[in-house]
Length: 172
View 1 (spheres, rainbow, N blue to C red):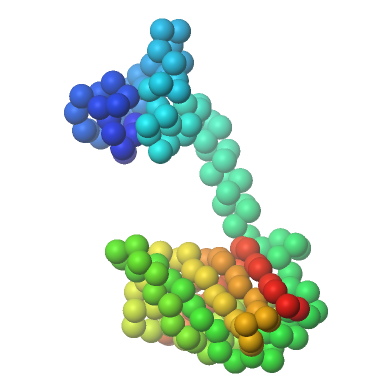
View 2 (tube, rainbow, N blue to C red; view 1 turned 90 degrees about the vertical axis):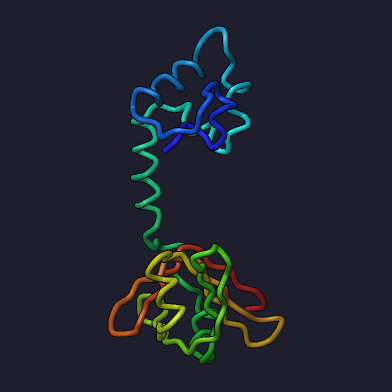
């Protein structure tokens, strides 16, 4: 890890991995009286990240992991459930190793818990093993549909399950 992507912009002349002492040094510099945090770290995409104590970051990681589970607000409405059960094919989008999206039509089954079961083989399976984030869209016409984003996991031999974290619906 580095304190930022462009180490030369936050006072470090070389690109190197950062150990705990270097990270603490970066934090001290960012909080110092002579150097403003914004002038050092604004060029770094994570300037706000390293300006916070580690205990706060740990609690955020725990909160984000807890938020990844499906809560009551993620349950589908009756109209959405009826629509999803009436359709057979949806489009699954996964992220490939190069970062490009891979979208394919798949047949799915909606479980009682509101999760989507589908076949995962070939490119889909490889993508889901390396990056579980995925999106799924079921649309019957341009004016009706449901889109979900979440994490997929392999549940059996060439079988995967998508657990929704976010949902969007239109025309229902």
